[in-house]
Image 1 (cartoon, rainbow, N blue to C red):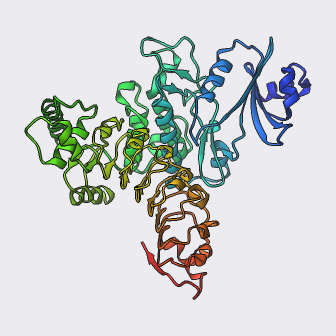
Image 2: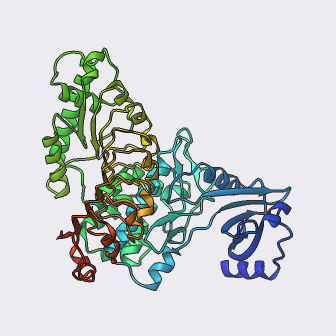
Image 3: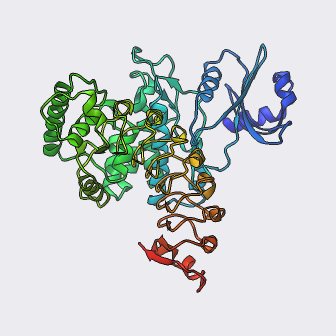
Amino acid sequence: MADALLEEFLAGFDGEHYPADFRRDYEALECLAHNEQGETLLVKDRRTGSLCVAKCYPDVDLPAGIGESSLLQGFHHSGLPSFISEYRDESTLCVVRGFVEGTPLDQLAAAAPLEPRRAVGIILQLCDILNYLHSQNPPIIHRDLKPQNVIVDGRGRVTLIDFGISRIYDAGARADTLCFGTRHYAAPEQYGFAQTDPRSDIYSLGVLLCWLLTGQEDVEQGKSAIQDRRLLAVVEKCTAFDPRGRFKNALQVKDALNGRTQRRRALAGLAAVLLLAGGLLAARLTAGVHFREPLIAQAARAALGIPDRALNEEDLASVQQLFIFGETAVADLDSFDNLVDEFAHGGGSQTRGGIASLDDLVKMKNLRKVKLAFQDIHDLAPLAELPGLEEIDLRNNPVESVAPLAGMASLNTLILFDSNVSDLTALSACPNLTLLDVGGTPIASPAAFQGLSALRTLILHKSQLQTLDGIQAFPQLELIHLANTPVRDLSPLLALPNLQRVIVSEDMRAAVEALGGNAKFEVEYQ
């Protein structure tokens, strides 16, 4: 049916029905898709020569066109297409977005089966994208998550496209007005059983994971072929018929895929009781100072050693360090590091903490060291009001932008491991930043931290780093951690005069040997 529509479209295509200013600015190169709602064109900007994609709707009042245009204009995420422009006349609406280079996931998987590790890596990136969408106010639900709408570029980076049937969640609605979606991937509620919400995308994510692991779109058939019990459990929970039985959000899916499962029931019950008691106690004892986040209140009390009286502004002015990992607030760095070690080696039972806002930190004007790991922190803007910060550790948080940290003269250490940060150039105005940990991030090249010339320690393990070209711009580097990255050419490191130690993984041994006897630095295998 789709092929017949496309052939019919191409046979009669002349472009005259598009808005005149659209035809003036763009040249149509190829029809990528065509259906009853309109066509998707690959176009070239006549002014710049750059490639773009135009979704053209023959009905200017069609909800899909209006919705996609408004949604794209609000996106600011590396895993989502960028809005460029909109054109309309009395009969046609054209929405132009950036062209996403890469291969649709269905074609990528058809060319060669994906290893489970790579399949999970793709789903993890989609978790971050969905978390961004679902964290909007109100949440944005994609509703058509399928292989054809997932683009993977040459560096393995994922982009989610096609927001034509996406909707903004309305908590007051009882059911969706229209039924949309793709068979197998659409959640049951998309067929009119109930209103869609972010858990509808979680369902589709589970189907997609099942398909990547087995080639089966029918989950009931595919589940029997999944050998890994943990991955099977993730698929089953994602695709529960009742939305209440699914993961509540994409971060929970990400945690489950990373092996960070929830505590056993007994421990979970005990933790809930302790957390509730701690939260109530913190709220009662800080009656004079209101905290938005109970965990931050607990951390302040731990730092001050004041468990049993109300805190005042003078007390908070004495707080210089805060340590929180997951749901646990501790008093000192050693206790925090112990939690990190347990978590990293799979021996801990931490679950993600609930901190979403950093507004409470502004009450502690003399903070020097802040470690808030494994939370749900996106916005760093409050940190801009704490110019005395020297060390910031926000590992395992969905942070995307470091712009609020620009110009922090005292900042010397920044840890953003397992975040969504891809551009750190704003930190070039931080003259004393010497240690940067951006392992487990989408960073692909040294261009991401251009201008950070004072760096001495750079941690990039488990990142998407593809190349070291440009690393010579960081002559002060003494240590660089590259283990479990795709980098296979280490020769640019030879241009670093102060480099003393390089950490790599076993699969990089050939790259080390290729250096011959030219390396003056120590190589450590991890």
